[in-house]
Image (cartoon, rainbow, N blue to C red; front, side, top):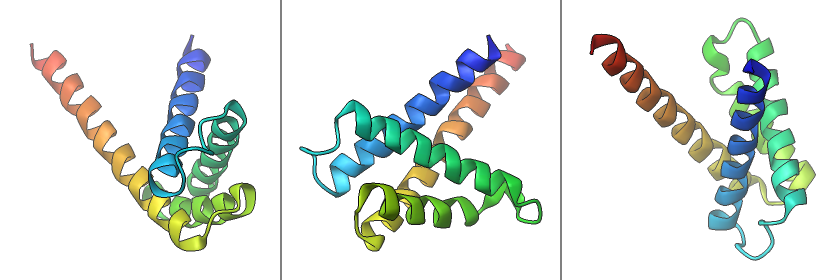
Length: 110
């Protein structure tokens, strides 16, 4: 069950990257299954790279740099667009984690 939850999470994160691509780059080209799959794999690889760097807390900065580089290489977008997407994705990721933390604390208190 745990693996299924993680798989759903990664697919949602990849869909978020595809949505950011549609917002910041071109909405017409980024809603295919292949783009969502590529965005998911790109996000997973960047997340894993940030996770494996042990001396940086929570992979701060490492994930964004890796995501930017991977987006440029895999999807052929400009480095500036990729950086904007990486930073926005990090913001939304932190925001969602904060919301889940608040929900967990609320449930625990209740």
